[in-house]
Length: 465
Image (cartoon, rainbow, N blue to C red; front, side, top):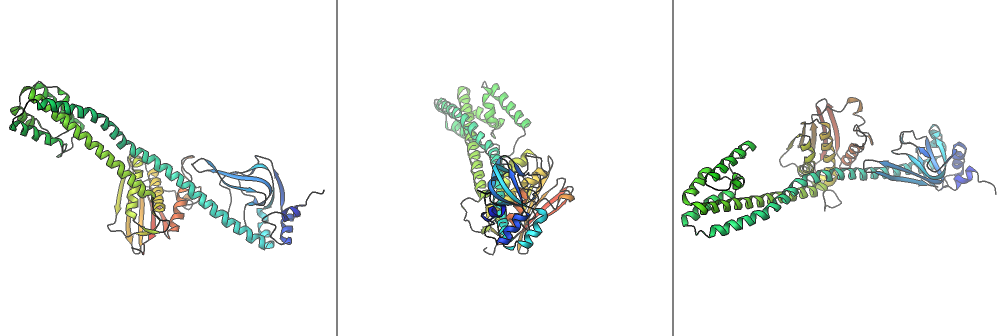
């Protein structure tokens, strides 16, 4: 049995077979047959795509790592086409194209592409359609991976922000049990002294100071230590354990108030009263700390829900830019704190809404603010402005970092272009930002010089106010 000719094999190719015989013959005459062993690389990530490749049989795949791990984003088998398509500006693939098994391809080299376009009209039309489908597939893949990267950053920031209030709740709850027991013991002891009305009034006056700890001022660590030492000396001077000084120092109780109490109560009654007040103050303070920490966690959860736009419809709706910026800052606050970056936010009052998808716009703000935080030095400054200009809302993200060099400004929105070290940047953030803004019928502009970089996003105001 004779071996099928290249023309015959191309006539059985799923993509080429629909073309006229003359066009199939042209591809057979101009194409070069290649055999790739399993593991062979058709095109490396750093190499140039040589031309259009018609896969006769075998299996090709392309894997990329955009910061979320190596992942297969596309594959080709017999009957598929890959490589450079007519009118495409493709230079290099985003990852190595590798043969998973022995594979045969026919290649029309880049130098012969004008001839393909000229001589093979129907095949060219088919290949252009495939190129558009491929572009949509890659765009969807880019957006998916960039969302995963954003979620990773979000999770890290959220974990950091939640750690402090969660630790405060655990710490305060552990101490609260002991404090309640101390308060109960002191209360029983105090009840045995059958205080007079004046004594009860004096105890109540001092106890009221526990409700609002230090309402008039916040003491420095040194001032607090001096206050605690002063109360400890008073307690010792009246024959009492100085352990209660720490709890009393957290309140607005003064030495004068303690002296007034000592003028009414004496001996063991005074000791029991001070111990009860100290335990009661500690219990109320710990309860307040737990309440504040729980409220902080609730605020963070609300911010995350707002940031991701959970429970939203999949259709455009009016989006509150100010709220979106606030939620985004909440999830990025930990990063700003770690670098001691000053954050300044100026949002115009009664800023009109824009039409779009809140989660996608928050992803825009997250990428721009995150890049600004990366750009500035320790102790730097990032400023956010949002205001109405005619029929648009303009959001500015400004930092005082070194600026974007002039020779790369035209490339920063290109896919896979990044100035960050390997493993720290995917090169997809600003490309995704640009695409999402375009989806919202908006524009993004860059103004940069040493010490000043501004990304300016313009979005049309929603007509559905």
